[in-house]
Length: 210
Image 1 (tube, one colour):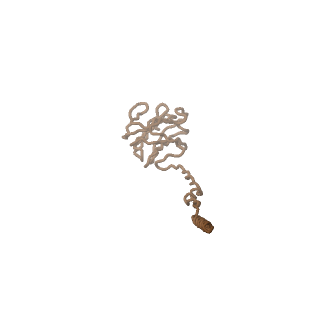
Image 2 (image 1 turned 90 degrees about the vertical axis):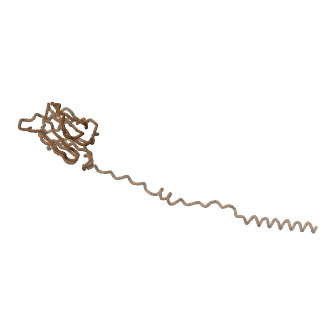
């Protein structure tokens, strides 16, 4: 009987120690939630970049006026009503600045024009003789609505020396209701053509960096 009691006491004591031993092991803790990184927070709350402000077209050396459609160097182009024209104009002068050439006319109305683009050769209307301006590239523009001059109105064809991008120019005499403007340059350039009034004139603008 005494042996059974001692055994029972030992068994109870072992159970108590086992319970105490297991209670000292902490359960694995769940990972603590992490705060979003500062870069992510900045990205989600920052406003999107505003679009760049539109630029305003300007007529500066090397650029073309906003209302003057650009013509590629090797493209053919003409005015809206080419070749019909009811004007009776006479070319009287040619002038230039760094990036444009102006041919002025006596008379009123808008002439019509046609350009075949840059080429290595150009010819006089009527005679078919070659035009030599001492430049490797030539741009020739035909203009309609032109009258024949009186004897006192035409002593020599207007010419232009080297100015800016242009190496030379000549205004041919009227022939059968038209005439030609021929301009020389060192290389092909994009360009555009405007017809203006008061006075009547044709302006050829060149897109080149001076």
